[in-house]
Length: 171
Figure 1 (cartoon, one colour):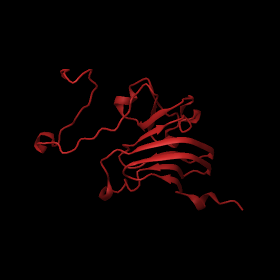
Figure 2 (cartoon, helix red, strand yellow):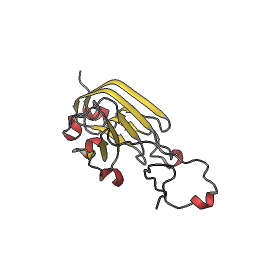
Figure 3 (spheres, helix red, strand yellow):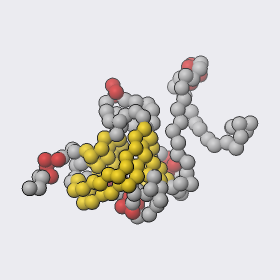
Figure 4 (cartoon, one colour):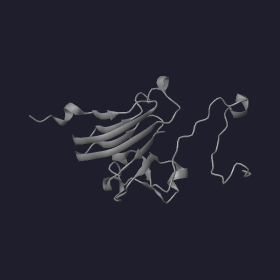
């Protein structure tokens, strides 16, 4: 007996935690109809009361999809996750038509979207509004803790940029 697609509306295959890192390996997704998510990131991050300001790193390898019309990826909340596709199976040719051996998948942030090594998906409905950056782009989690004095850092934007050495002057 086959399931009625309406019986699984809203179903999720994997929901990642809101904090910490997770490794997803050797998973097969089959027959996900519309209005479902194969992978949803950041459990409970859509709730302001349990929202987290940290970045979650998700390491994915050996993933396959068969007969998926629902979302392959849905980034919940502020979309701060970094998804490392370790072997190219997550960002298969279905992502944007390119075959790759690895990638870092993130939200479509302007500073990365302008890099030619970071390509958007050709199907934002199925892959959320993400981009996949090849191995020439280093995407890392950066956190600031215990900034002091707090008044100096309150309500101001921070910008990170690469420098050649710790003695470089940053404009």
